[in-house]
Image (tube, rainbow, N blue to C red; front, side):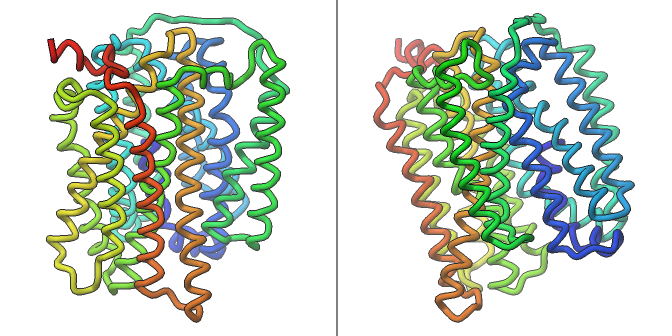
Length: 447
């Protein structure tokens, strides 16, 4: 529900803008408000789960998200819509990290790869299916339905999690790091807002660079604060764990390219090749099939070959296939495009399943809540950075080429983000061959 909602709205912005009397470019502030809410409240999700119980916070987050969805559907102006999206983002900020925490606490380490594979599927499927579903609902029903469909899903989630989610209610009533919360809020919100403005210029781009600088400064201040605090909101000491550190570093690098793809590819297919949104969505949808296919092989692959080699090769090959999309032309057969996207979807799913799982191989249960919050923040920042990099490359290269987007502009963007994703392979190739064997089952398989 959350992953779908963050992408489904993009195709509906013109219809929403017309209905509430605004401009589509101004309405992009609603997208930014949603991501800013995520950036502010994700860091405190770990403390909330430890203080009030992860299951309670998970169900409350779903309820808040539903209320935000209703508020969005009844918005009547730009201000009310942006405020509603921000409120919806507060609920969203707790759902995924706390849901991941519940999964980690309730799953034996040797079954974590399989569990992470299920968690990875919606994260990869939603970005490519969201625009397709959003376009269908907006065209044939109304834009309100992209929010109303969250209500029955949310109700089912609250009821079913109450019945079936039997997880020990582990609570750690430590005091909340209020100072750290405000510094982190400025750091992450400033970074996400700045990157969003750079990639989706609803405001003058200078504001993007200014808030990005503020965010970076606040991040440095937070690191200084965390070193002097007994219980920091996000504990940087978790990076002493080599596998967790590698998961964050490699996963963030790879996610830069993956985050840029849903922005670049539809734009190239529609503006460069003249396809309509439905034709574009029908082609890009195939990568979601690849993500689902990988679910049925990923556990055996990691058990057979181990984390370092599989993650290294998946990152390099995934980056190469991402860069290969820059070689598409209007004459490229759709079947060839779809074959490359299908293979890329398989590799991306394998990579994220393993990268998410190996990060918890050397994390204790007591540190899991902190770890899930850090992972969620890193994911948001890397995706925002990927879209900003892609947008900045298109902006700069199109300006140099006369102000019009050409195929060359997209080629440069795809080659750049593909190269960044491939660099993630170096992080994992440097790990010991037995890294994370307690999670992958690789050692047991060899014996």
